[in-house]
Image (tube, rainbow, N blue to C red; front, top):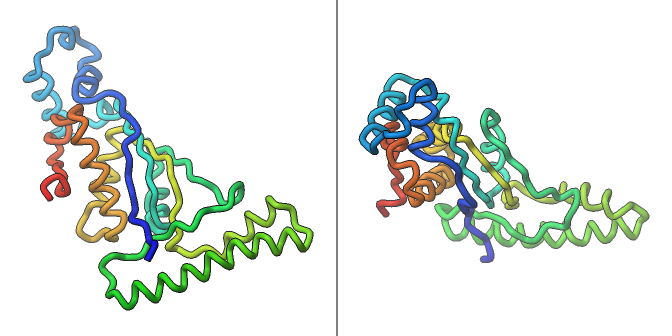
Length: 213
């Protein structure tokens, strides 16, 4: 089977623990001589007291490849979140699709066979529509109706740190769908790798389970 896994890449980030602390100290001069212990202390105080606005001063920028269901989950997060997605209106998509890894092998093979057929129809439909007189743009934007939920799309996703906390706490929950939970956990793992947000993550009780495995 040619099915692809969902993927997350951290493109870049701005800010971090000290940026959060400096925002909290806007009315003071303390930031200039603050120690790491000072930063950790004020970050913990903010987390404990629900003071969230200083955590909006950092940005996290990801490139995500996911199935349509996970894409929809991401789109539900709108405050402090920006998402751009590749569009099948403007380009002919490649045959990238997702098959649940926890399915029995016979079900995975059956879905793989169906998806291969669907993608053949998608590409051939586009050609047929152009031959029948539709513009290439109209052919592309309507041939995509052949594409299933398993189709993977590429997404440019950014959060401020506070919005990421909200996303993670909802989507990494034990009741969340497995696919979006993987994306949330992978994002957290990548954030941890930067080392820039250790105090802020710890203050909110976050630690990637994927980093342990």
